[in-house]
Structure formats: C-alpha cells, structure tokens
Length: 181
Image 1: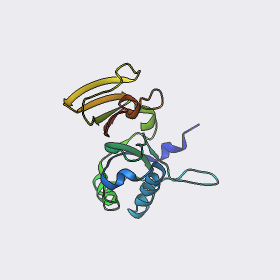
Image 2 (image 1 turned 30 degrees about the vertical axis):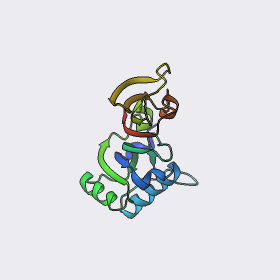
Image 3 (image 1 turned 135 degrees about the vertical axis):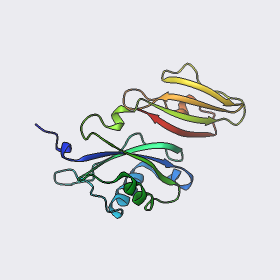
C-alpha cells in the first residue's frame, strides 16, 4: 500500500528563534507556523480523517526561554513551490525574533527530521568557573570557548537525550546552536 504522503512535497525549514520569540512555547510556535503558512498562501497538505490538521512537525522543540539558531520543522505541500519565494513569503509573516534561514526540499518518503536528529550543539555560559557533569551518558563533545563558556554537543532525539540543564545545572545561559541529523 502506498504512503498517502508520497503524493505530497516535503520541505525542511531551518529557522532561528531568539529575542522575544524565545518565550513562545512549543504548541504556540506550531500554531504560529501554521497561521504563517496560511497567510503566505502556501498549498499546505492536510491529514485525512475527522479532524484534519496541517502536516507540520517541529523536529526537536526548544525549552521555553531558550534561544535556538538553527532549528528545524517539516511541512508537506500539495504542489511544488519555489524555495526562494517560499522563504521570502514566510519571513514576511514571522514576528520579531523568528527568522526562516533556509528551506530544502526532501523526499516525501523516508524518516522525518525528528527521527533523524541524534544530537544538538549548545552554547552554555556560566556565572564564573565552568562546572558541568562530565560523567553523564550522552556527552558527545565539549569545547571550551573562553573562561566561562563552553560548546557542548549532547545526545538529543528519540533514542537518547541529555538536556543541557542536567549537564550544566549552574549555567546562567543555554542556547542551542544547531541540530545534527
């Protein structure tokens, strides 16, 4: 049996979330993207059934208050669109602090971005001396950026997940710099 999504066009949308947009929760962010797609006039595909909804998913939601500089969501469209025009029209609909960085068309079949995410890169700032839990399972890489800031690549996704707040509980600032697929 054919996957119904195979008739659609899937796009990975990379975006940044900073400033006042850091305080938009995950469900509100999905709603914001949904409304922006409608206002941009994009031919969004909907699920089948009693309560149809847009075929849209955020790969790895950010905790409330955390900035992200290379986040990801996927959307299915009923027809192919020009990526440059799509980027421009979506950015015109975004509030302050949200920006579409890049859009890629990917195969409609295959694993979702959420299933492919295996790690996330965080910039973690400390109030003074750097202190983190180096014995936790899920640490992939650590780089010391300066006397009070590190860059940590931590396991993320559905198989294994190490939150930066657990890894560095005394930190004053956590920012996600990107996701690794």
